[in-house]
Image (cartoon, rainbow, N blue to C red; front, side, top):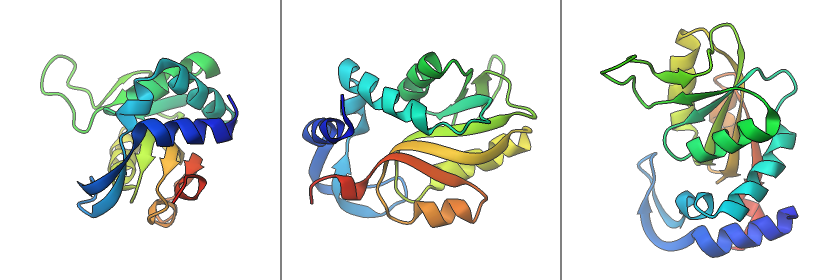
Length: 172
C-alpha cells in the first residue's frame, strides 16, 4: 500500500472531530483514535512496513511505549528482525518489577516507538527512565506527528523525532 492510501485509510477510520483532552492536558478539536488503525490488521501491516525504512541503521533494540505502541513495535520487530522491549509507564509492582520487559536495553542503541505524538511528553518521560537503565536513546519513531511542538521539545532532550506521517499529510 502506498503512503497516500495509508493516509486516506487512517483518516477514514481514526480521525474524530469534537472536543478531546490530550495526554498533554490540552484540548483539541480533532483526535486520531490510534486504536482504530492499529486494530485493522491490513492497515497496521501497511503502516509498519513503511516504518521499517525509517529505523536508524545503528538501532539495536526497539522500545514500544505502553499501550498504543505495543502492536506497532511488535510488528516492526517482526519485519526488521530487531529485538523489542515493551516499556511500561511505570515499573510494575509484582513479578519482575521491571519498567522495560523483553530485550535488554543496557548499553544498547534504543529506538523509542510511539503511535501518535503531540508534545512528546511521554517520550521524554520514558527516555529519561530508559536512560537511567543504561539505554542510549537518540531517536524516537512515530506513526503520526501532530506537529504541535514535539520535534523541538525532543531535540532539547537529544532525541530526533522520525515520523511516518505528519498532521499536514491529512486533510484539514
